[in-house]
Length: 119
Image (cartoon, rainbow, N blue to C red; front, side):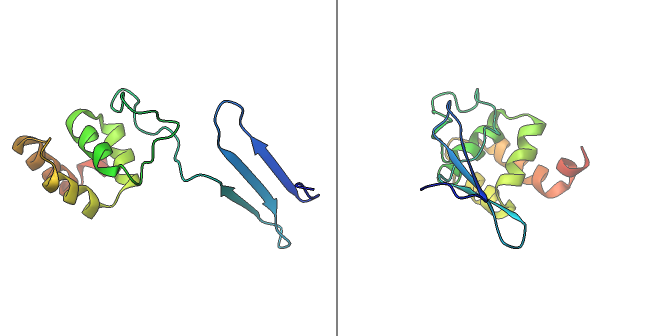
């Protein structure tokens, strides 16, 4: 049998993600996600050509960073900084052929300035 007395399974009908909540002997709950997806944290308008139900934020980080730098709001910048390291963002900014020089210079300044955390 799949379920034990101390285990609760939750299945969302609208999305194919399956979450398993298990009560350990210590009394704590563990959350295990069967797929490595994150919730929709970046506005879908920035990633309009992708299916966000299957979008892998870890694998396609360069696309997310480019879109947020080009067209993102302050809230999306904050989410981007939570998702990715500063080094990862700066590496993508330097790597990108999509971003113009003005966007690259502003992004470097903005990340290093502390304005992002003050707002």
